[in-house]
Amino acid sequence: MAVESEYTIDELARAADTTVRSVRVYHERGLLPSPDVRGRIGYYGSDHLNRLQTISRLLSRGMKLNGIRELLEAWDRGDGLAEVLGVNDQPVSEPTTVAAPGSPRAQRNQAPPELPEYVQQALAASGDPHEAYRVTNPRCGDLTTRLVDAGISARDAFELVERLRADCNQIADQYATQLFYFLAGQTYEQSGRTPKDRAKLESDLAIARLIATRATSELIDQAFARHSELPSA
Image (cartoon, rainbow, N blue to C red; front, top):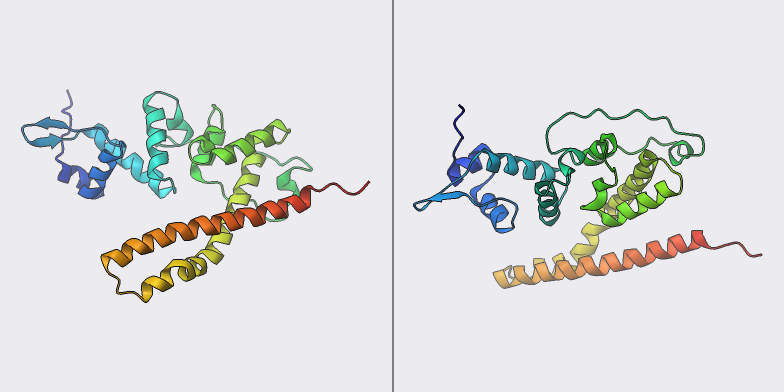
């Protein structure tokens, strides 16, 4: 009978190619179960190692810790998100689809953006593909659901929303550095860079992000409003 592997926290961190500090943070944030404590030493098993590797994969896909925690909790409840989000290392072939005339994909000359792996896995899975956005981007999930209800295929709906996401990323990449520098970084550069100045920088950055997000949301709302106006009778 196979013997269950046991790791101290240092051994676990090395095996998962992470740091002891990260292991402790994941435990504190509720992503990693508690070890088996014997004496004054905590011992971790293969389940902990697998969980750490899953967390690393999801982080590399751009997910935040809060979203990962919710996802893992749903996984532990047996909600079937392991296959949907591709965290079980089982290869799933991507379905081949042909764009129908008049579909969003056929209307664009440019190649559609490459879908994130978790979306590809969701589209290939037999369950509800909208689960791919349920945890990470719930409003995008609502948009794709409404597009599908309007008669668009799930694949085309996801590609349309992903194109929108890619354009939003481009906007952030183009303007974030300047906005954050002028609203927060410039003051920090001119300071003594003490811990107090660092704390102020973090606060200024949070405020800068809020201001920039609200302004961008207002501009996008105005832009969409122009396209939703009905012609004069």
